[in-house]
Image (cartoon, chains in turn cyan, green, red, blue):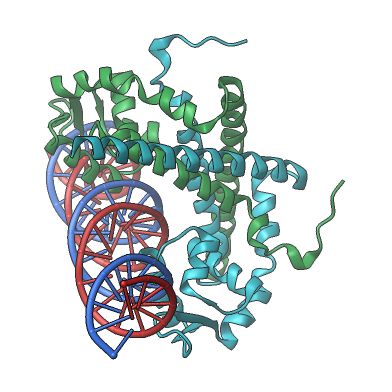
Length: 164
Length: 164
DNA sequence: CACAATTCAATTGGGCACAACTAAATGATG
DNA sequence: CATCATTTAGTTGTGCCCAATTGAATTGTG
């Protein structure tokens, strides 16, 4: 049982999202160091993970895996292309689609990336099962938040509709 | 007991930081909707929280509370100033320091912000104790990651020293 | 007092994230 | 077949985040 004085609701250290943001940026700091050798930023690393796992993909699919849109991916992919890790080629079947393909260099980078997860896992100080549990919790949270955002947006649209 | 095949270490869905990032961005989506009424972005809201809680502060102290540096805060504070929520005044005692002060309007905004934490808490689908537990877990994670990053940086500096 | 080291805010540059929009290609419908 | 809606990338604008640098003010030391 816990009760929180109403006046404390706005306290910074009670905001779950602040802890989340802080943890996210702390991860960023560790990844920055660990990925420097590979010449990748963290989001670029995520893109490479998806390509290593699924092979060549159109930008759209890539974005679905990563929950990112073209506004984020387009410039990011250009940088990966400039670094020689991927090529971008218009699909012959559907000219709207751009296929992202690993170069030999990009494929080869996987070997050097294999050590990254272990180093990161070590940095967290958590064991595999603890990480798994936390991951599950966070995924659950994300799902609830996405649903809530959709609801809010729907409510807003309805309100706007009545207003107009 | 769980064993993970070495080949799976690079799978996207095993990366704790991906879940973390996703949750962080999902929060962003909810906050975007909820804070639109107040005319604040999420980081701006965090700054206001600190000011409401601690009163006027120099930029430096603000950054310590939020783990943000001047490169992030300077333009953000200018936007808050342009919105009429804060004033920035050079300290008389120490001319290097800039005091961030709430305007009446900024102080008044607190009343309207009081509802925000409840709406966010509802959106998570977690109860107060679950949130508290997750927060503790994340803070623990952040601490471990910061320590690891400091270690990595120190090791790197030592290596560079030997190299030079 | 003079001078070096430190502190603090601001700026610059690179990269990420999202919203809104454009443009091109495709698909569906009458 | 012509037209309209949808799909897909890309672009632009706003804002956040960090690293590195600058410049001014302050503090410590001889």
